[in-house]
Length: 485
Image (cartoon, rainbow, N blue to C red; front, side, top):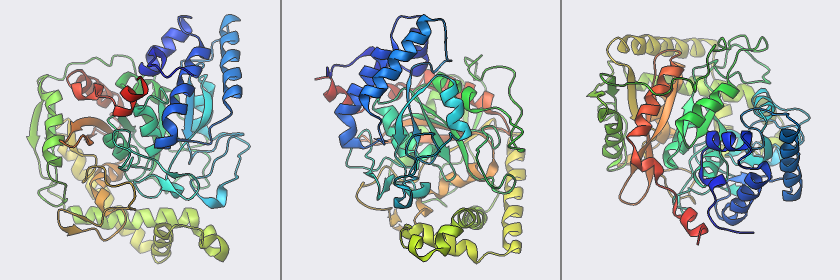
């Protein structure tokens, strides 16, 4: 195969979509170029797993071209190669959840998210790697191994959407889905210099699910290299369904419409490290805060704010609600002694914590969460968005499980170093992860922008303005230039 850089892997998904629809570029060429890049880079970075047979994929691409010739257009993703996160069920395609318990699991049907992506014309080429059952913001598992950071393969890719983020950054995929409970869209986006969008809860229904009302921490969402791709994929993923009673009404207009908007006078509240509550790596706050200059350059006003709310209460609420959710989803596996031994220690710890909780504990946690949302909504009388880093550390050594300390402060759980993402998760508000730049070692970090309740559209407009003044977004991983040699 030819390893030269090609337009069909270097452009964004929206541009590729237009080129295919206008017959300026064939689906066959797009598939060939992406498979070439995957063959060259994926063995080192391990972003895409369960890759389908290349000959079969080329046949699918040829069929997509034939459909266009016959006047049948499948949608904006027509003929584009897509790999679905390995936590999401895909018909006829192995779905392992990163667990040896499901190493040979091949679902009979797509989950709703995958169904919507497939219905928009995408060709599923495989899956993107994830931690076991999505737990922990570091993508490694006993089935497929470790996914490596796109900018430095000695470092973690983040997670749990680590495979998706790295595949996007390396141009192995034009666009990707992700999911987010504790920063699983936001952290890997920040560490791989791409965009991640955690939509308002209910914007993207998650089905199938055996429980439809109580567990409201996690949501699926789009990841992309451009804001217009982010918005287009949100169009595909979003939309109410009677099968998910808490789903938000479908929008009358595309999220990609009217993206270009003035941000003069926009008020951004910089929470930063919450007055020192969150320990952070050296220079991380400065790098992240400097990223907001992309908005300041267009007239936005950046002001520091320390929420008049005890962040330790948020952690208390989070621990109860997360362990309750995790234990409910995995209790059956834990009860079976044989399968229990195959669960990662962090998962067993979560389950055991959840099993000790009472109904009163859950109620108290929900009251804290409710009070936080009331405070946050009050803050939006003064600010349009609130901002924090996407993580408390830069990407760490890929060979360790998780960082044991930050700035000399011990981390008492496997996810305490990601505590900075829970204000956005607990709010249920839309949260954008925008690339904020690089440190002097070439490690990227992102900034979280928390939007108003159900303000997904406005947050995407703010992201588009940010994109116009953030040249570091164009910085590509070293492996891409090496692949072109």
